[in-house]
Structure formats: C-alpha cells, structure tokens
Image 1 (cartoon, rainbow over the protein chains, first blue to last red):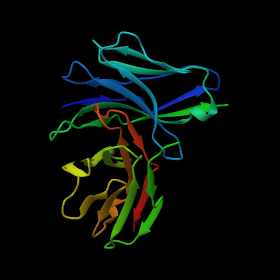
Image 2: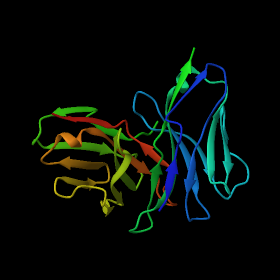
Image 3: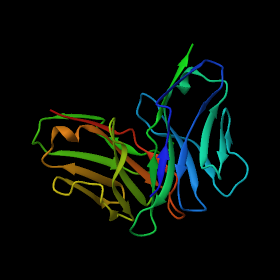
Length: 118
Length: 115
C-alpha cells in the first residue's frame, strides 16, 4: 500500500522569509511522480509543483522548489520569499494504480496549514 | 482558462433528502474523479470514470451514493438518503487524455451540510 505522511500539521513563516514543508512517502514503484497541491481558503486545489522520480534534478517553479531524496523517500517543498498569498493548506500527493484498468489516482497526505505573518 | 466547474458551491439539506452534485470536466479530459474531504479523513477517493465508464467506486458507500456520467461534459454524484455524516466538501477532478493522468485539475468543490 502507498502512504504519504506530512508530519507538520501547521507551519508559519514571516513574509519574505523561506519555509520548508516536509513530506515522506512509501511506494513499491520505481518510476512515479510526486506533487504538491495548494488549497487556499477558496477551497480550490491548485497544483504547485511536480517532480518525476527518475529525474535527478529537483523541480523548480518560480519561488517554489522541492528537495527530492528518492532513497530516503522524502519530498519537501521550499517556498522562498514567502508572500501573504502563499497562506494555504499544502498537500503532498503520490499517484498509484487503481486496481481496475490502467488508471491512476492520487494519495494525499494529511496536509500542512501554512500561515504567512506580515 | 479551462477549468473544472462544480455546482452547487454550497448545499444545506436535511437528513433524508436527496442531494445531487454536478461537475463539468475540462473539455477533452477523459478521466473524472470524485473526492470527499473531511477534517478527520482528509481527501478520499469516492469514484473514478474513464471515457465515461465507472472504473472504480470502491470508496463509495453503495447503499446511498451513486455516480454517473450521462455524457462527456457532465458527471454527477448523488446521495439518497443523505445523512449528517455525509457533511463534507466534495471535489471533482478531471485528467488529461492519454498518459497516466497524474496531473489532475480540481473544481472548487461543493460544501455539503446535512442537518
């Protein structure tokens, strides 16, 4: 069974500072993707960044970057120059095969609520 | 911008009433997922469709929940009869065709309150 663990229910960061959100996972697959989704108060689930497991290089999207440690099964999200609009719940997610067909669905972690302090 | 549209955004109903939630996936997407989000359980998969066919609904209470895709532009999730424990946010998500659909696009969800 696949699992995704986010051990930090809440985090806070000062505006313009950097914060790192942790995620560990377990999977038997060798090739997979990992995602970070952001859920602001509007409830919309927004894809922040995606990492392909076979790639050595850590993914980067503007102020968002990941630290992917495949052997350790760790996938942390770093937010640089934090902005008030970054305040949201952040979910780490891992796709896995649904039993029927070739479909894949996402297993989500329990989330980390990020507060950005002005 | 293309997006997944869910209606209604909020629904308050009394126990025993029927609830229908609707989802319009992104045009051209051939996979549709229904997720339920609660504080206790987090995000749980309820049902999954590919090319309008239900492929997995093992996460859904069969006695009261049903999910359908009458056409490629509409997915529905119905609860009959509703119970207070069904109170949650229900998300629809659609995935792009081909590949393995890891990248999902979510709607804004339906906040359901069953009194």
